[in-house]
Figure (cartoon, rainbow, N blue to C red):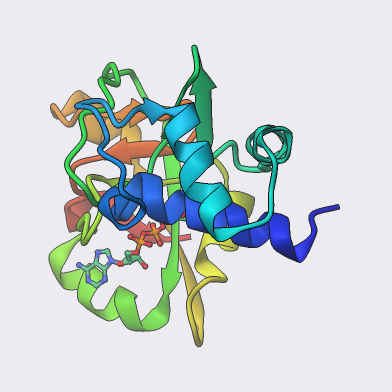
Length: 179
Ligand code: HQG
Protein backbone atom coordinates (compact mmCIF):
# COMPACT_ATOMS: atom_id res chain seq x y z
CA UNK A 1 0.00 0.00 0.00
CA UNK A 2 1.03 3.55 -0.65
CA UNK A 3 2.69 5.55 2.08
CA UNK A 4 1.95 9.20 2.72
CA UNK A 5 5.36 10.11 1.29
CA UNK A 6 4.68 8.21 -1.95
CA UNK A 7 1.35 9.99 -2.38
CA UNK A 8 2.96 13.36 -1.74
CA UNK A 9 5.78 12.74 -4.19
CA UNK A 10 3.32 11.51 -6.80
CA UNK A 11 1.20 14.64 -6.38
CA UNK A 12 4.27 16.83 -6.65
CA UNK A 13 5.29 15.04 -9.85
CA UNK A 14 1.80 15.62 -11.32
CA UNK A 15 2.04 19.27 -10.36
CA UNK A 16 5.45 19.68 -11.96
CA UNK A 17 4.81 17.61 -15.10
CA UNK A 18 1.32 18.95 -15.80
CA UNK A 19 1.15 22.47 -14.46
CA UNK A 20 4.36 24.09 -13.28
CA UNK A 21 7.62 22.60 -14.59
CA UNK A 22 9.31 25.99 -14.02
CA UNK A 23 8.56 25.71 -10.28
CA UNK A 24 11.04 22.80 -10.26
CA UNK A 25 13.45 24.45 -12.68
CA UNK A 26 12.39 22.11 -15.50
CA UNK A 27 11.42 22.73 -19.12
CA UNK A 28 9.18 20.22 -20.89
CA UNK A 29 9.71 19.50 -24.57
CA UNK A 30 6.88 20.01 -27.09
CA UNK A 31 5.34 16.63 -26.26
CA UNK A 32 5.61 17.09 -22.51
CA UNK A 33 8.75 15.00 -21.87
CA UNK A 34 11.60 15.88 -19.55
CA UNK A 35 14.79 14.01 -18.76
CA UNK A 36 14.24 11.56 -15.92
CA UNK A 37 17.60 12.58 -14.40
CA UNK A 38 16.45 16.20 -14.18
CA UNK A 39 13.08 15.20 -12.71
CA UNK A 40 14.83 12.95 -10.21
CA UNK A 41 17.08 15.80 -9.07
CA UNK A 42 14.10 18.14 -8.72
CA UNK A 43 12.12 15.63 -6.64
CA UNK A 44 15.15 14.73 -4.50
CA UNK A 45 15.67 18.41 -3.64
CA UNK A 46 12.26 18.41 -1.98
CA UNK A 47 11.81 14.86 -0.69
CA UNK A 48 14.10 12.25 0.79
CA UNK A 49 13.66 9.69 -1.99
CA UNK A 50 16.06 7.72 -4.17
CA UNK A 51 15.92 7.11 -7.91
CA UNK A 52 14.58 3.60 -7.22
CA UNK A 53 11.84 5.07 -5.00
CA UNK A 54 10.74 7.40 -7.79
CA UNK A 55 10.70 4.56 -10.33
CA UNK A 56 8.56 2.56 -7.93
CA UNK A 57 6.17 5.48 -7.52
CA UNK A 58 5.83 5.70 -11.31
CA UNK A 59 5.24 1.94 -11.63
CA UNK A 60 2.86 1.65 -8.68
CA UNK A 61 0.77 4.63 -9.69
CA UNK A 62 -2.71 3.14 -9.89
CA UNK A 63 -3.89 5.44 -12.59
CA UNK A 64 -0.60 5.19 -14.54
CA UNK A 65 -0.31 8.96 -14.48
CA UNK A 66 3.29 8.97 -15.76
CA UNK A 67 5.10 7.43 -18.71
CA UNK A 68 8.80 6.65 -18.22
CA UNK A 69 10.42 5.76 -21.54
CA UNK A 70 14.07 5.91 -22.64
CA UNK A 71 15.18 7.88 -19.59
CA UNK A 72 12.48 10.50 -20.16
CA UNK A 73 9.26 11.02 -18.24
CA UNK A 74 5.95 12.79 -18.89
CA UNK A 75 2.43 12.97 -17.47
CA UNK A 76 0.01 10.89 -19.53
CA UNK A 77 -2.79 13.46 -19.30
CA UNK A 78 -4.17 16.34 -17.29
CA UNK A 79 -1.86 19.15 -18.41
CA UNK A 80 -2.63 22.81 -18.14
CA UNK A 81 0.70 23.85 -19.71
CA UNK A 82 0.83 23.84 -23.49
CA UNK A 83 1.96 20.41 -24.69
CA UNK A 84 1.10 18.31 -27.70
CA UNK A 85 0.77 14.72 -26.52
CA UNK A 86 0.65 13.67 -30.19
CA UNK A 87 -2.29 11.36 -29.53
CA UNK A 88 -3.99 9.78 -32.53
CA UNK A 89 -7.73 10.29 -32.95
CA UNK A 90 -9.64 7.03 -32.48
CA UNK A 91 -13.22 5.78 -32.53
CA UNK A 92 -14.67 5.91 -29.01
CA UNK A 93 -16.94 3.33 -27.35
CA UNK A 94 -20.67 4.03 -27.87
CA UNK A 95 -21.06 5.57 -24.42
CA UNK A 96 -18.63 7.49 -22.26
CA UNK A 97 -19.20 8.95 -18.79
CA UNK A 98 -18.36 12.09 -16.87
CA UNK A 99 -18.63 12.42 -13.10
CA UNK A 100 -19.16 15.90 -11.72
CA UNK A 101 -21.00 17.89 -9.04
CA UNK A 102 -24.69 18.77 -9.08
CA UNK A 103 -23.62 22.43 -8.95
CA UNK A 104 -21.51 22.11 -12.10
CA UNK A 105 -24.38 20.29 -13.81
CA UNK A 106 -26.51 23.46 -13.52
CA UNK A 107 -24.13 25.23 -15.92
CA UNK A 108 -23.22 22.13 -17.93
CA UNK A 109 -26.86 21.54 -18.87
CA UNK A 110 -26.85 24.99 -20.47
CA UNK A 111 -23.28 25.20 -21.84
CA UNK A 112 -22.23 21.61 -22.37
CA UNK A 113 -18.97 20.18 -21.01
CA UNK A 114 -16.02 22.51 -21.43
CA UNK A 115 -12.37 21.68 -20.97
CA UNK A 116 -11.92 24.40 -18.31
CA UNK A 117 -8.19 24.62 -17.29
CA UNK A 118 -7.17 21.42 -19.06
CA UNK A 119 -6.52 20.65 -22.73
CA UNK A 120 -9.54 18.44 -23.16
CA UNK A 121 -12.74 17.36 -21.49
CA UNK A 122 -11.89 14.15 -19.58
CA UNK A 123 -14.30 11.24 -19.97
CA UNK A 124 -14.34 7.78 -18.40
CA UNK A 125 -15.02 4.47 -20.12
CA UNK A 126 -17.21 3.21 -17.27
CA UNK A 127 -19.59 4.54 -14.62
CA UNK A 128 -17.41 3.28 -11.76
CA UNK A 129 -14.44 5.41 -12.86
CA UNK A 130 -16.70 8.42 -13.45
CA UNK A 131 -18.00 8.02 -9.88
CA UNK A 132 -14.46 8.10 -8.51
CA UNK A 133 -13.76 11.27 -10.52
CA UNK A 134 -16.96 12.87 -9.16
CA UNK A 135 -16.00 12.11 -5.55
CA UNK A 136 -13.34 14.82 -5.82
CA UNK A 137 -16.20 17.35 -5.80
CA UNK A 138 -18.17 18.62 -2.82
CA UNK A 139 -21.90 18.07 -2.37
CA UNK A 140 -24.18 16.00 -4.57
CA UNK A 141 -22.67 14.12 -7.50
CA UNK A 142 -23.99 13.59 -11.00
CA UNK A 143 -22.87 11.01 -13.55
CA UNK A 144 -23.41 12.11 -17.13
CA UNK A 145 -23.68 9.74 -20.05
CA UNK A 146 -22.09 11.01 -23.25
CA UNK A 147 -23.46 9.76 -26.57
CA UNK A 148 -19.97 9.28 -27.98
CA UNK A 149 -21.17 7.19 -30.93
CA UNK A 150 -23.33 10.06 -32.20
CA UNK A 151 -20.67 12.67 -31.44
CA UNK A 152 -18.14 10.65 -33.42
CA UNK A 153 -20.51 10.13 -36.36
CA UNK A 154 -21.18 13.87 -36.36
CA UNK A 155 -17.50 14.73 -36.68
CA UNK A 156 -16.13 15.13 -33.15
CA UNK A 157 -12.64 13.74 -32.55
CA UNK A 158 -11.74 11.52 -29.61
CA UNK A 159 -8.39 10.57 -28.15
CA UNK A 160 -7.41 8.07 -25.49
CA UNK A 161 -4.42 8.76 -23.27
CA UNK A 162 -1.88 6.02 -22.53
CA UNK A 163 -3.64 5.47 -19.21
CA UNK A 164 -7.12 5.02 -20.66
CA UNK A 165 -8.67 8.45 -20.12
CA UNK A 166 -10.93 9.51 -23.01
CA UNK A 167 -10.43 13.04 -24.26
CA UNK A 168 -12.39 15.36 -26.50
CA UNK A 169 -12.52 19.09 -27.20
CA UNK A 170 -15.99 19.75 -25.74
CA UNK A 171 -19.31 17.97 -25.33
CA UNK A 172 -22.32 19.99 -26.53
CA UNK A 173 -25.51 19.53 -24.46
CA UNK A 174 -27.37 17.49 -27.05
CA UNK A 175 -25.00 14.57 -26.39
CA UNK A 176 -25.38 14.64 -22.59
CA UNK A 177 -27.85 13.00 -20.26
CA UNK A 178 -27.73 12.33 -16.51
CA UNK A 179 -27.09 8.59 -16.09
C1 HQG B 1 -16.60 20.92 -14.75
C2 HQG B 1 -8.39 13.57 -12.38
C3 HQG B 1 -19.35 24.28 -15.09
C4 HQG B 1 -16.29 19.45 -14.90
C5 HQG B 1 -9.67 12.81 -12.60
C6 HQG B 1 -15.27 19.26 -13.77
C7 HQG B 1 -9.93 12.96 -14.08
C8 HQG B 1 -18.04 22.58 -15.88
C9 HQG B 1 -14.56 20.59 -13.72
C10 HQG B 1 -9.19 14.20 -14.47
C11 HQG B 1 -18.40 22.86 -17.21
C12 HQG B 1 -13.18 20.56 -14.33
C13 HQG B 1 -10.11 15.29 -14.93
C14 HQG B 1 -19.31 23.94 -17.42
C15 HQG B 1 -17.05 21.20 -17.24
N1 HQG B 1 -19.75 24.60 -16.34
N2 HQG B 1 -18.52 23.28 -14.82
N3 HQG B 1 -19.73 24.27 -18.64
N4 HQG B 1 -17.78 22.01 -18.04
N5 HQG B 1 -17.20 21.53 -15.94
O1 HQG B 1 -10.39 18.54 -12.77
O2 HQG B 1 -13.04 15.83 -15.45
O3 HQG B 1 -6.09 12.48 -10.57
O4 HQG B 1 -10.36 19.82 -14.97
O5 HQG B 1 -17.45 18.67 -14.74
O6 HQG B 1 -9.57 11.48 -12.19
O7 HQG B 1 -13.10 16.58 -12.99
O8 HQG B 1 -5.61 14.46 -11.99
O9 HQG B 1 -11.76 17.81 -14.80
O10 HQG B 1 -15.92 19.01 -12.56
O11 HQG B 1 -9.49 11.91 -14.87
O12 HQG B 1 -5.01 12.15 -12.79
O13 HQG B 1 -15.35 21.51 -14.47
O14 HQG B 1 -8.49 14.63 -13.29
O15 HQG B 1 -7.30 12.81 -12.69
O16 HQG B 1 -12.35 19.83 -13.45
O17 HQG B 1 -11.08 15.56 -13.92
P1 HQG B 1 -11.11 19.02 -13.98
P2 HQG B 1 -12.36 16.41 -14.27
P3 HQG B 1 -5.92 12.98 -11.97
